[in-house]
Amino acid sequence: MKRLIDKLKEEHTLTNEEFAHLLSHYDDETLAYINLQAREVANAHFGKGVYIRGLIEISNHCRNNCKYCGIRKDNWQADRYRLSKEMILDCCEHATAWRRSSRKSAGAIRSVPLHYPSARNHRKPTNAIS
Image (tube, rainbow, N blue to C red):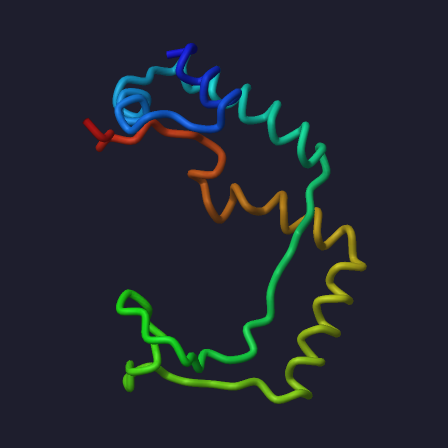
């Protein structure tokens, strides 16, 4: 398994068969190893800083008609909206004020495991691909 993980780290790809094998035959040791490798790659590319980002969705009107999408052009049942210029600027003002409050940001990060307990404990999936 380590061979596949090392290959993925170095070559950035695996064959379909290799991916299937990795996803269906891992154990706790394999998970620990792949997490270590992923952490090394992430630290090399992004460092150890935590950045909180958000977006302001100003509209859910869409000109595209992607069949899978709930806000596609022809979905007449979608509850459509468009934010006004004032609403957009108000969102920006609130986001800027929130960002300046480092205690609030740190508190929000610390509260994640309280609201999402699964974020604290990684669990092996029960329906692994075979």
